[in-house]
Image (tube, rainbow, N blue to C red; front, side):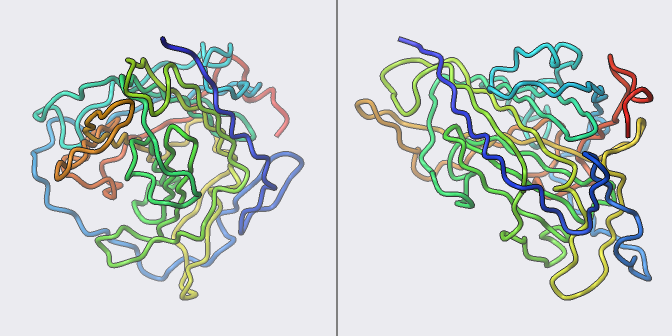
Length: 308
């Protein structure tokens, strides 16, 4: 028996973001809030295990003034003006095995936030981790990576499992540059809703899918001072202007499971699958050079008519 359940995790946390000033309901992250470093950042290029077959995928995120109702289902009228991305592929590209289950995403934006809708086909709904900032990718999960100014330096990562457990972190540089992630950073003000089409953690039936709706206020993408006092390189407009382009990618971590009675367990020794929107060409999500390019475009409600 398949039932439709919804997990609503819409904790209204106060919007707090270092370096942001509130102008009415619009949060502006100034390009001059933090000093720029005297020399440009030159990211270390990783060695690719598969030759790129095409450039990064691109997506036009339409503006829609009225925020969608967050219930995880994605049937709000706002989503009708946004297109689905391409189906996710293996992290190393199309030369690898095609993902066993479909994953795709939509994006919208307005003056308050970026909105993400993810649809994940799933025959076996499974999640175990329940505490914020546990290593959520040890479960099946959905992940978003955002580099607002596209310089491949400072970026944000948010992971969530089917229980709605969140792992959020900020990286001042990529791991290969020798940096450590800031696990103290929280996506303050983010709202989230999950809908399950099936029964969670019950292997006796066949499930259909789970979906995630996320509201990411622009305030969470404010520049963050480095712990050592060094200058940040990040500079962005929040909310973005029509035509602005950010680097964004999405990942789905999927483990192979065994069934015992009504329970699930990971297959011992078998690594996870990594399915992504735009390939990284290497098993490493922390290569912002290969993330997709999302352009913020005008939508059904002209941006020029919205009070800024």
